[in-house]
Image (cartoon, rainbow over all chains, first blue to last red; front, side, top):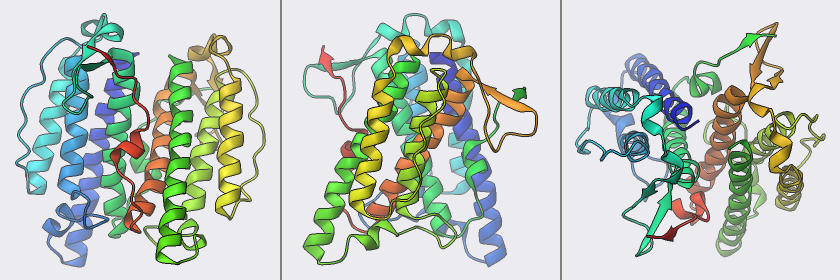
Amino acid sequence: MFHRVIIHCTQMLNNVGVWLDKAEHHAASKKFDIAVLMSSRLAPDQKPFVYQVQSACDYVKAGAAWLSGQAPPRHPDDETTITELRARLAKTILFAESVKEGDYAGAEERRVTMTFAPPGSVIVGADYLIQMVVPNVFFHVTMAYAILRHNGVDIGKMDFLGPINWRPA
Amino acid sequence: MFHRVIIHCTQMLNNVGVWLDKAEHHAASKKFDIAVLMSSRLAPDQKPFVYQVQSACDYVKAGAAWLSGQAPPRHPDDETTITELRARLAKTILFAESVKEGDYAGAEERRVTMTFAPPGSVIVGADYLIQMVVPNVFFHVTMAYAILRHNGVDIGKMDFLGPINWRPA
């Protein structure tokens, strides 16, 4: 289940790639600089679009790493352009997909330290996945989606969900 | 795992209750009618705040029901006020919490029919949880959060995440 959930979070990053393509198309058709969308936000005290994508990437990367007993690779938050953001998505997806199902053995009981945990506290693997990784990945990808949606980019719910494993009834 | 994930989605609805309290406080302090926030949206072709909460409730209710082999109770989307929305959250939480861990036996293999599935298609339990219930619950609660945030309500990431099971290191 750990592997399936992390792979689905990774798929959400692939979905973000589709939204970026639509954002770029929107900017071109309206003749404005895509950089405007990259720095857009929904409130003055909220982090901008680029940060939302970086943060979603970080939670996918951290989840794949800590739950498989690895330290996450360092990915500095230095992206500013859509091209750099696509590269950030790609390297995150590559890392997350390098972690195989068997690597998550014992994930449920792994103890994860977080910088904003109360002093002397950790979070245990299953709680980390359910209460931290998944909510943060979805929070940040949805916020990225909301910023684009608010700015008129033509994305809809099926772009959000991405591919679904429908099976014959 | 099914039970833990659905219970966490249910907790997200409790978190929405906290955001409603803060939204009400914000409206009172700025002396505007809370109904303005209930009908707010981020784009003219997006559904309003009330719908976002109704839809999050529906996916929690449907997930708890179909994955435990029950038909979901009917909850008509007739709420317009914050009081009615709190009642919708409460009845959804009550139903979802009535489904016990053992009721999810066999959930992974259950076949779920969805109105927007391609003709002749179903989705199987684990995919339904990971690709449909969780993404839709988080999509709609985050969109509700984003609408409030955009309108100046004083909510932050910890209000989004809600209680975390920190353990002694």
